[in-house]
Length: 112
Length: 119
Image 1 (cartoon, rainbow over the protein chains, first blue to last red):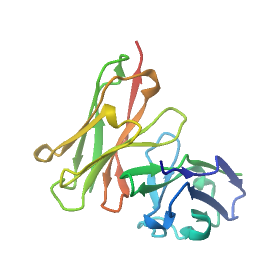
Image 2 (spheres, each protein chain N blue to C red; image 1 turned 180 degrees about the vertical axis):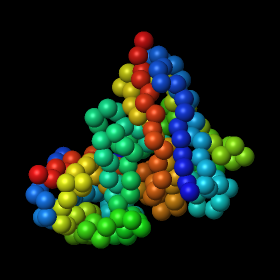
Image 3 (cartoon, each protein chain N blue to C red; image 1 turned 60 degrees about the vertical axis):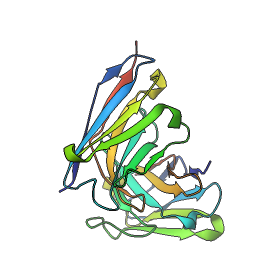
């Protein structure tokens, strides 16, 4: 089955840039869109990136997404880190062979 | 604006069947390209996708839970129902429903409902 693997945790200082990776287990991650969700404690997830690199309205341009076919991975980059960015981040895509949605295991971002 | 809200029991016993209802507003499940999905999250753990139903009644299920899940829609009531059979304590989680787009984006989420499985 298709899986998405994320680092368990990352940490960085305010004002810096951090990149969270999401690696596909098989096939081409570029074959289906990747979305990224932010989840703060006690709240439902919200979308920060959709269709690989699109930002919903209201999401600051400090958030960006990309796909690297050579490593079969997607990345979420957050620049100019703020303490309010501290949250769990999940990537999500779709297994088009078996027709189901897949979430990555989530990455806890600490801004300190 | 689009809103979704999950409802159902907060406590179920092992082996029982769980029935959750997602009641939504701000969109219609008869509109082309629109769907509603269910996702759960055990305490302190990651999101897990469960099922999704589209406007044309196309249904998708998690391969690992497919035998236990059924998703249905009532377009006239703006509701989607998820049933999960043979509940076990490991199924204790917050269950979310979400509005889905045809590109598999889950762009609006309910607040979630915590379901505890215990005797």
